[in-house]
Length: 476
Image 1 (cartoon, rainbow, N blue to C red):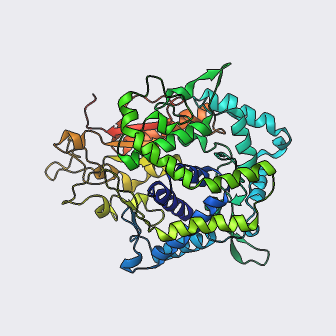
Image 2: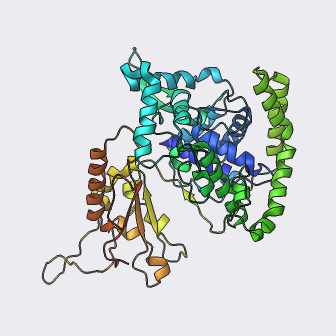
């Protein structure tokens, strides 16, 4: 889990990069490569090494000069966890790919997972995508791009460049015993090899219906393109605090349709020109990548060093100042396995009497859903002193997970949107429909025991998330 903490630091840093350090296009490409590729470009590898050095400084230092940016709070972490993060970042900044062969790790995981079906790889991958994922409303994922990711671990190849550097951020360490009985930690890849990274950003076309266009019954644009459009749109909105027009989110589309009115075009002309100027500034490096792809040769050492030096000089000359979103936020890094202690030990971080911030949403991934069964998260019943009966009134609970949410406030804007969101297992290829229904029933039972009820009737084979509201809220 410490590797997840480290990856989140890097992803947030990429998202909040300023335009002076990374252009909109560079942020989009670097984020998607780090997020879903086991192999990345030299540009992305250089950026990762640069940020790893920076993370080491503020993770291990208690000096105010090297304190983390406003959006990261690592003060609750123990020294042991800080040491683990330091070892992870030191592993990231290594430049020798021979010490960690991620392609070999991927192939070994694939062989062990498929077993005797390994020789039938094309058919296995085609079945998992066209039958399982498409039947579960993930039709935007193209069978060919899904098969390529399952086989090679490459999901997002947004440039005609060499993706030949190991993405060390996907590695994680596990302790193993040697033949001599000693316990050593080995780096390997134990991440996803089935579901694909397309699920997160690549199946939602709500903000760009042009991506839903079909040719001969198949989508014209796959999940990789959809992910690029959605991520670019979110990054642009985070920077400008305005809705992103289609001509910025998807510049390759014909934007003369009704989705782009004249007012939007006029208001974003200056922003588009700024992006184009930033991309032209970095065009020499892009040209080198394209030339390398055409010739099929590895990059010349001198050119590669020059490109890395150019990026490093840019990052060193411009200090990292994260973007300021319209709504300020802070990610509090708590000790590992501390979720069940939120209502008690770490309550002060989330609930303070003088705080103007309110907690309205609790989100739980499917891998952590079993923790909802913990007795530490359940509300305690108040017992009447006179009768000894359990009080079943509608008063707000002062303990348990429910007590962390603002649902009993007089202000409807604060207390009327309290939600518990639990990720479903809908897109897990290996999970059968009956198992999905059993999972939904089990999560519903655990949420009910915590004082929640379903916001609407769950549809196990359609809902990718399960939504719950406090039991005492009236249905609308």
